[in-house]
Length: 233
Image (cartoon, helix red, strand yellow):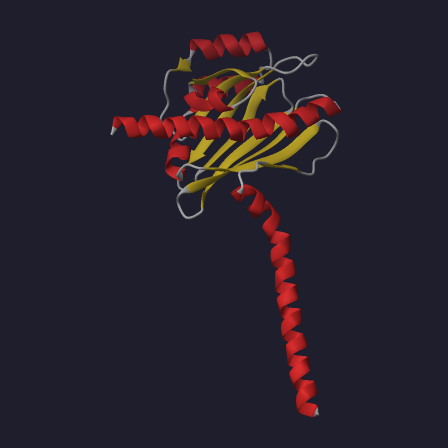
């Protein structure tokens, strides 16, 4: 009788262990399941105040990480996957630092200096970019000078605001191998304060359209880049 009780107790303990493990796995699976099936996942992050927007978007790109990295680390390619980016070009570091020191926020001043000292190419890991974003009506365009740092050892690109008509903005790209080395998990995170309370329509536009569009465009552009690389071999 005692042996039967002991046997059943062992069986119950084993079943409980399996249920616990399954429950933990079930909590981990949804995002991975969605990513494997081509879904793009957008997450709203915590932020203080109604001016700030903090969010993250990720998706799997059916291209090896080296190809994706080469594409996004070239700042000339940014307009190809960044929606509403009207203007982007690199400027000399000395000009960027001078503008930052003077805290210049007027668009005319930033543009005149940036155009005068813009670079055709830049191979440094740290790049300074002048950007103009086309905002939906009735919001005025946002313009800024950004510092971009590329870390090829970690497949990361970090950006932060130097000066402009935004209160605050920073973002990061991070790439990871997915499904061995056949695919790439691309994650873009952003925290921004445009300098005014964000209306609901603008937040929804960013979360539902603009952020997913970044990953979708990156998929299309890197696929084309891979085809072009293959044709050169």
